[in-house]
Length: 422
Figure 1 (tube, one colour):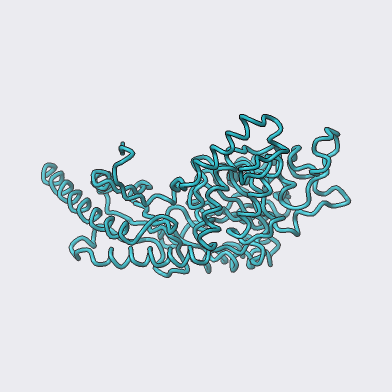
Figure 2 (cartoon, one colour):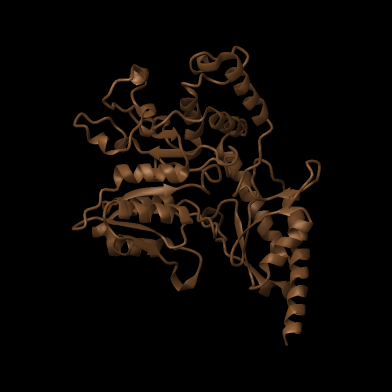
């Protein structure tokens, strides 16, 4: 869709890319002024009229702001790199396969492809083969949902040979919210290191990573957190795994100068002594532009009162969307269904609508003609995600009207095609 800046549109794609907060442009301009007027001194000297911290401290400030969103201690959170890169860093530190013992990684068969690529290449990096060391969870009965009981049965089956469990907080295709505390506890009781991909959960649902005893997690910040396209990612490492050990056990991680002891960072001496906590997993100095954009959005989360009120509105928005979808004409019901779990505790903002074969392209075209933005996952799914920080009940209501009209048009087109083929 090509749109004029003044054109009205219904934007329900916060699960793919969040909208730009109003204050982002102002904060970025303040960063640019610091760069223009201070040069390298911007690392150490803040501007008097700017709320931005020094560049040396900007990542620590971002960690302070994002820690409540993921439910970690500040020391357990780092703002760094991107999601897949952070996943690789975690596996480099904590995936230590033994072909005679624990060497398998369990993940879902429909995981986001980048997670698959990361797992496959990590396994090969250790001289192993994915067909031996990767277990893919297939939803039972050819469905789209992964029941907790089923996941636990697979974990139990492979417990003695599994090193790492990698699961999504929210499944990107179906919108299912997995039971993070339950599955974490189940796997950890069997000696398995648990990593969560929170790309679709961070900023969407309340999280308590520390209290849930999650070992580690990664997330992006351009979806529900609204940091901007390709914005810097985040990493959580539980404090039990992030201490600086006297025996040097921390040296198995991949390291860089930004993870070194902050007091000695600019002494330029050899010998890596990491910052205690997740910050010790950092490698290079982060993009201040990225973090400035991220922090502008995190200010909005603080102004909104945190994840509790945000989630409360999200539940109401998505429930309203469901109730209005269920009012669509009965003669349309054979051509679409909601595959996202119906219980509010098993989903976030997103609803995934499964269309009958041959309808996706025409339905999407019909929505675009009506200036309604959702996204698709082929072959037949439309994802609709009302983001509580900026979407309204009116947005949901207008989507319903547009979807009904677009589906009706698509069915007419499908019928005409079938008539021509006879």
